[in-house]
Length: 501
Image 1 (cartoon, rainbow, N blue to C red):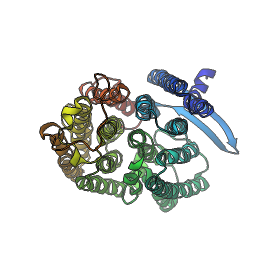
Image 2 (cartoon, helix red, strand yellow):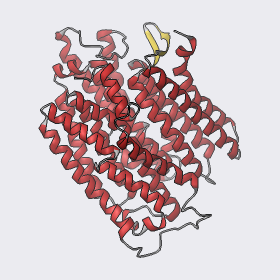
Image 3 (cartoon, rainbow, N blue to C red):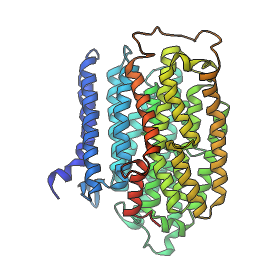
Image 4 (tube, rainbow, N blue to C red):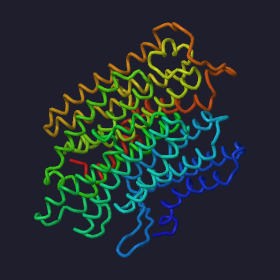
């Protein structure tokens, strides 16, 4: 293997790791230099991931491997599955960086924020590129440690309390995952992720132990994926600044948990072996309950970000439902929702942050007439909300179409009821926001309106990211048949690996 190909996955991690080191070394007052290095690192990562995407499409191998313990290798590998998550992470890091620069302008402790922000992205990319369970676990733990300072960034009592809950849940989940991983290594020894699963040839007498290990692994990952009853930390973490909320929900913590579940089902156990063990129906049931529970709780939330948080609890479980229905079409729907949910939800949190920053409005009941005051922001939010509901031809419709089609093809007709109920509930908690924003007149002054400067409704640093991601929501639906759309790439995964019928 050429040395560049063997080092490229490591270089992808280093772009944000070096950025973090430089930011910590700069003084707090060096705002322009910090902005330059933030954007340079994000652009470099996106360029390298783009090159990896092109290489993987042409069946080029990118792998970094070295032995750091006897019989245990540290492995970073780019394949069609990892590229899906890596491209999402790199693209949304750039947009979130742009947003955070504008959002935190004039705020204290920006060096600390952007330093840990870059470390968080390093850990997320490590989770994405991990080639075996031990490497995945190392970066999964680093993700917990690097996001904690972001959750508690404001330093208020509420933020500290939310951070403590976040640590209790995630470290407890990590302990369960570590126990399952060690038990598995005792049984089978070290192994890499495999396209058809690494455990399918094991002695049937070990099946009861493998079921117990599956429960431990999924339980540990389910904390970050916000499966009920392990979700409580997520709504509380909404005290964090808007860029952190966007990162948590769209690409980092929550999505890392869902991606880990995909890895365990497909690349550790294998979909066929998971079915033979009988673990998929239980996982599907938990995902379905989480979908409905999160949507019902979202209905009752007046706090804007908490409503979006419970929506995330529901929407991320579409991924788990798709991969647990034992059907290739449903699996495509679940995997493509990994991307579609990310771009839709980050749009919503950008918009919520803009409304809070410009008007001081944090509650749904305070949004009357906001569409007239902030048309660009609310137009972006509206596109994302309609996508979440499943209105064609937006990204969310593509996900739900494949999930529903896959459920019917697999004979799992009960899942169609779950998807239909979820879509109705999505409409019930998103459409009132759109009605207030566009059709109800403003009844009273905004809680704390900032004077506009220039011709934009808010700083271009804050307006550009949600508009850009809203455009992506539209394009992901309109161009779904293109090979390099999210759906097109997932279909490439299906054709090359194990999801195809």
